[in-house]
Length: 142
Image (tube, rainbow, N blue to C red; front, side, top):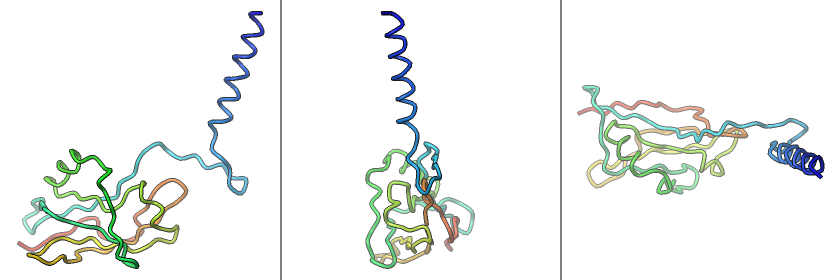
């Protein structure tokens, strides 16, 4: 009886390992890291100090659709803003882009008008979002 449970347990372990393997596309296994990738931009003034933006937005250039980062960590966002770091894209939004990439505008408020201060070409691979083009550091004049 003991060997039966040992064999059953071993069989379930092997079955569990096979079910945990990623599905294959075109006979090529895709194995992704467990990291959650966030693309960011750093904004500084001409003195090199971080710039805190009370409002910013990222929108898909072709549709004007705004990206929603409300599901992200608000505590980390507040820390990042004090350092002049702003999220422009995350793995959670990969459905909004393609492998070749789509353009996204980074906007900030200048007085009462939103102004585009950076345009980014953002693509993806099988696992993560990728920054294909665009400056990751912006210097604003004082």
